[in-house]
Length: 75
Length: 356
Image 1: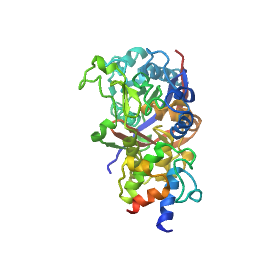
Image 2: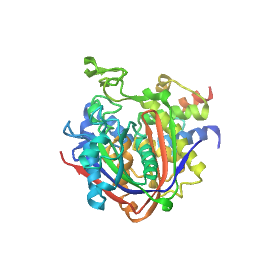
Image 3: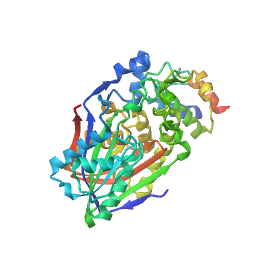
Image 4: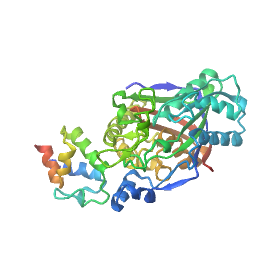
């Protein structure tokens, strides 16, 4: 699995959806049913644990697509 | 990670009690959230309905006593068999004296017994089990252990992070000495006092004695408002604590005791919110079918969610069969208590309703 697919798997785990149903262009707040702030918290924790990246809530709120999140991880 | 073991004790009876008054979050949440937002919040937390004392004079002690009376009535347990009373609560009837002494009086128990409270929040049921078990062995007498919370009077109805979560409930559990027949039980505890403000009540204690302005509602930057005597919660910090510390605590006790998820019949977790419980379970390869859920109907009654969940979801199972149960409570402190115990054909009165 390439790095992008690994990232998508982790995001799918948090969103509680199938990884096939999302891609880098998914607008995770609007395209995903049942989006809520707990899933946002969960992502921030995953970024710290798995990517050693601490991003601010403000920066996180600016991210719209999964690709925006991935770009933060690879900066 | 250290864990402790105890043997020679039996989990004899458990009953729980909730107020009959039901609050429907779909209705009561309309003031705080827009329609879609509300739907998502309820879905994430899993809380559709909650039980709240309607009468401001009803307390956790009343609810817990009702649960205890059920045990005395239905098991033939004699009042003179009780060798001690332990009450876990952070919402006692009075600041002084404690709840346990009032239990001794209201149930007509012997004057010649120890009776005391333990002040803990969400991890409290496991602490209470541990302490009551040690006492049962030490005294060689049965111990009545009550665990109840009434949080409705210290929860702001204008606080998005707590208003739709909290419920009121009480419970009673009897631990008895079992000599050599008892199985080995395991307990593990963790304490993070450095994060105490993630979940706390700022005023009304000795550090900040009650002032007139503590009764005023003050709005924060998120639009929520609460009094200084209300519970406040930093959702992100609590979430982080649960996902990281609690998940690894459960993993460690299972590894250290060599008890895996297949050896455990069910996991009685503190009902913080359903999404968190799914995440903890996933991280520990626990099938969610082994994680009973009661938060949808009863809300989060702090430590009392553990006996409420056992009584509401596993009543028949613990009455009829032998079960190995992993219990875990986590929250205010921040504090974690996890135990692995057995419940072998115990008396369980289920959920009793308290009419006000």
